[in-house]
Image (spheres, rainbow, N blue to C red):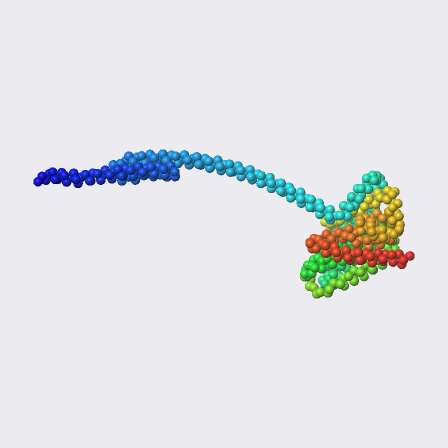
Length: 496
């Protein structure tokens, strides 16, 4: 037996499978390596990631790894370029976005400025309307004076329209009262009166009658400016704000009627007293009966308030310096002397002005200059009307028929102070005219400047309830007006 041949055969038969298996494994590894390389290139191109093919063929590894590294480098380059392009796009987009944001910010700033200007204009209009509402009578007086100036052009006779004694006395009185208010004298006095009472009826009596008698020395509108806030403070401090309407209406009535007794209690009294040179005794005799009837009406109305116990928690105001009060009361007395013709008005004007500049300069800031200007405007209005022949003839006829009724009706439309100034030019019956322009302050809200002051204060304190206030105001005012008009006719029968 040939062993060598068998050995060779065995070697061939054994080696063939081995060789073929090796070749097969090599081929498979190459395919796998190629596939891995292609996958890697695709992955690198898509994601910018680095990778190398893993080959199990030792013989094919160097070539395939080299190709793989070359592909990776190429893919990295592509990825870098793409990133650079992306970064450039991002930068451009960021710059564009920043530009848009800047433009939007500028537009927003412009809109903001426009809104501020619009708000400022609206605020200005609101302030103007508020000033017009607060000075309705003044606006009416200025318009009326301006209209008459077209029919009677300004000339030298205009200087004779103004009653300088009335204007000087009014200014001095208002200035001294303002000085007393600066020292809170009236708050101190009213606080002492109010805290002495223990139920709502007594409190209402105190508030109403301190206004009633206060208007006798400080004019009706100044009395309300002083005591209306006090009334609200008292009511709110004891939890009885629901009585605000009746208290304010009664304080308003008290201010309009309380001042009728004295020449300086109401502006129209001051004017008529000076214009007609009414003797002091005759003035008091004329107004005594209407004043007494008004007192009874006000007291009777206050009795309808239930005497509910109240506890006032308001801290008492400190007493003003005594020496200042004495000085101010001397100046007040000096101002009143103008009315009685004791001293010339220009001397009093100088003394009061210089004294208050030294003692209380801030008092001049609180003077009601609108009231002074209202008087001046109606001096022009009434003076011009008196120079129109047709108007003069008509008013002389109407006022001559009944100064009491015509004067009262005139107050309901143009207020009591303008009515006094206007109608005084057309009648010598100062007694009826005096009663008419005092009781004529009752009725409509425009019948008296004091009524407009009260309405404005109530709207500020109790918004949303104005209609209720006006209903109560009208009921009390017109009922009082009817009674006092009858009293005026009775006055004519009693007085000689």
